[in-house]
Image (tube, rainbow, N blue to C red; front, side, top):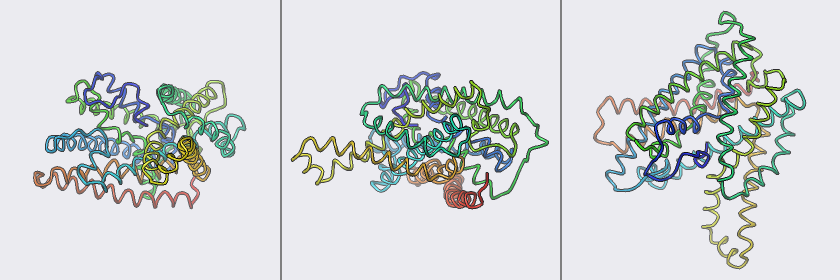
Length: 413
């Protein structure tokens, strides 16, 4: 979730958030629509394999988030600089190339989340109004003009409350799903604990995507009034989320078994409570889409405004600057909508994003930054752990991408 969507989070190094507020910020920055795809992941790989993947993802992501904080503190101490973002830290450790790669991965991650939003909106509205999720392309298309208009809003002050609204709807959706699932509970004896090794990267990708608040790590830590307690607060938040994710995925899978769909809300009956949650989620995501896209728009605009032809054109025709910027934002939204129309399924896409950019940002880059920042002062065990995480993240990104495409080709439903 974009940083601008967090109402309690600022950019200043003088944090004011209490422990409770910091805990809430962490939850808001991590929880998203990916959680609604967890029951499907349990179906694909089995309940024991999925629960293990969630726990492992939580532990590794927590450890790597703390690595980023330690590296930031070390770099600031040695270089007497102020580091606020992931890209800043990458620039001070690996130069312009490191900053470029890190920021590019963050942008791809943000765009991936936005595409997932569009697919989620399309499939859920299609299920409400047509009784089937297969006609989601129409609903994605009719909301493109709305998203373009929202993209032209250059201040996010009026939009940020919808980020909180989206998380409230997520929690309500989880509660309603659990309520309905318990009525259809089939028991562990009718569920698979493990399906195949080939399915493990798929569920791991979904799990990593569900913990995708890593790009916000440094901002979350500096937002605290007592940043020295960030580690314990982050640990409590991850323990809470891992417990909720595991319970939610397990209950959803045990309720519907082989009929579990890639968005669990699609399994629910179209009664008034389910329809209200689906419409509420879609409305909230409609407005959090521009919040997620804000840093992407800003980076693209900065690159455009630095170009010589744009500066010359703006100097000759002052009105042209705003027109071109609006065209750029509208074009970006259209491209994401086209990509969303090509997505074969919500769960498959979430796994793909989690297996690629999320794995690189969560595991590979923190390990590389830690090795470079503390070069010469790490003992053999620390070096071995960093290399193990680096190797795991790289192999996971490559094989996870491959296995996701295998799922697409085989048409697993």
